[in-house]
Every structure is written in structure tokens, then in C-alpha cells.
Amino acid sequence: MMNCKQATQLMSQEMDRELSWHERLALKLHVLMCDGCANFRNQMAFLRRACQMRSNDER
Amino acid sequence: MTDSEHLQVFFRERRDDLVRFAILQLRDPSQAEDAVQETLIAAMQAIEQFQGRSSLKTWVFSILKRKIIDTMRARRRELAVSNMSSTGDDEREFDDLFNRRGFWATEHKPHRWTEPEDSLEQQQFWRIFELCLDHLPARTAQVFSMRELLGLDTDEICKELEITSSNCWVILHRARMGLRLCLEKQWFTQ
Image (cartoon, rainbow over all chains, first blue to last red; front, side, top):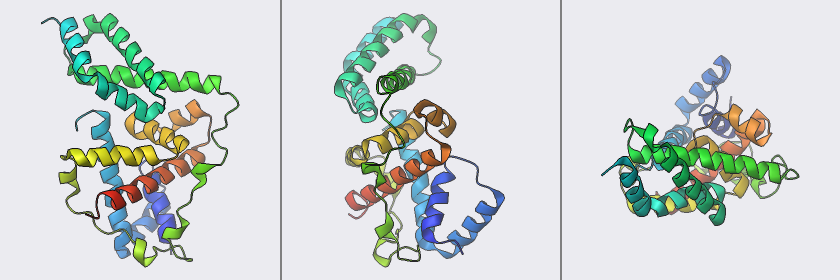
């Protein structure tokens, strides 16, 4: 099974590139079972949103 | 007021914001000042084409972003010897967050952030956000800025900085790990 360290790498990379079918499936299974990584994923989305606001000077 | 007068008012009122945005990415106050100066000149010259299709602020920021990219490019040419892929401070790994099997160490397991959306409305949050960005190692911060603040895709960043895609992903991952950890410690624990 994929560990959290590998999962965090993929959760970052999914912000930058399209993951392969295999990577998506492995990540999905991991996140289903790991609330730490589920939280991490939400936080990655939050970081992007904050950066977009910062970049468009909406803050 | 004419567009040109609006532009002058905007620059008088918002100059500090523009400079701060440029410093965040260039890490060099005088280069940041220059980029803002060039933005003003470019904006003055192109004001005829502005035509109010977007807000003046959005338009000026889009010019500034291009100027920041230009500055980064020029800097890369000057620093031909500098090697983006060399190791150094950026090599800080986040291994201590995980146990030996690569799962979250109990005390470092990410917990849910409470009401993150509310934070975006708070000035104090943005001060901490910038502080956290500033604390990233310079090279990590530069790649992250290009990706998330200037909105370049990784192919463009790789070309610009002459690094490989996988190197770029590793750097972006470190940046996000660092920023997440900093925000968690400095803001979301309260």
C-alpha cells in the first residue's frame, strides 16, 4: 500500500500535472483510509486558493 | 477623470502593495522597485488599450507579473553559473513528519483546519501567510511563486529555470509542505 509520504508527493503533483490512472487509484484508496492525508489534500486546495487571492490582490 | 488620471491615482495609492508583491517574488527590494517603475511606464504607454475590459487593478497586476518574469529571466542570464538543481538549504526534507514506514508520525498527522475560509477575510492571516512565504528557502520560494502567484505551468518554469520536470515537482512539493507546516504552526493552532 502507498504510504503517507508518497501520498503527499502525489497530492502535490496533482496540482501540477495529470496523474496516471494507476496513481489516481492508489491515491484514492489511500485517502479513503487516511484522515491525515484527507486533511492534507484539503489544505493543498486551500493553499492554492489563498495564492490565487494573493496573486489577484483580492485580499 | 481620464483613464490616465485614474492610473496615476492608482499608483499613488497602491504603490506599496505593488512593491510588496514584487519583493515577495524577487526578494530584492531594488529590483522590485525597478519592476514597479517599469510597470508604471508600460501602463502609461498602453493606457489607450486598457479600455476598462478588466479592472484597472487587475490590468496593472498583469503587467507587473510580466515584468517580474522578465526580471527573473534577466537575472538567470546574469547568473549563468548559478545552478537551480544544486542542493543546499532547499534540501531540507520533511522526513521527521513521518515514521520509518513513511506514515504520518502521530504528533504530525495533519488535523482539520477550522474555518479556513474565514481566515481569508482576516488581515492578520495574510501577514502570516506572507511571513510563511518569506521563510521558504529562496529557490523554493521562487519556483513556488512562478507556479502559484504568476500562474506559469511547470513546463514554462522548467524552460525558464532550466530544470527538469521531476526536479520542479520536488521543489513545489517542498514549498507546499513548508507553507502548510508554517501556517499550521503560526495560524491554525490558535
